[in-house]
Image (cartoon, rainbow, N blue to C red; front, side, top):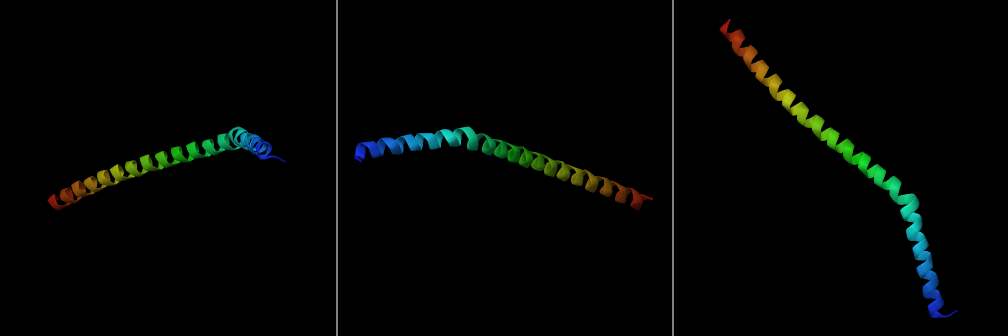
Length: 71
C-alpha cells in the first residue's frame, strides 16, 4: 500500500466520522445542553424570587414587631 492511498483512506474515514457525529451525536448533545441551560436559568430566577420574598417577609416582620411594641 502506498502512503497516498493510506492518507486518502484516513481522510475518508475521518469524513465519515465527522458526518456520523454531526448526524447522530451532535443534535442530542445540543438538546441536552439547551435543556440544562434552561433549568439553570429557571433555578436562578427562582433563587432571586426567593430572595425578594425573604426581604419582603423580613420587612413585614419588622412592621409587625414595631406595631406590637406600640400596642
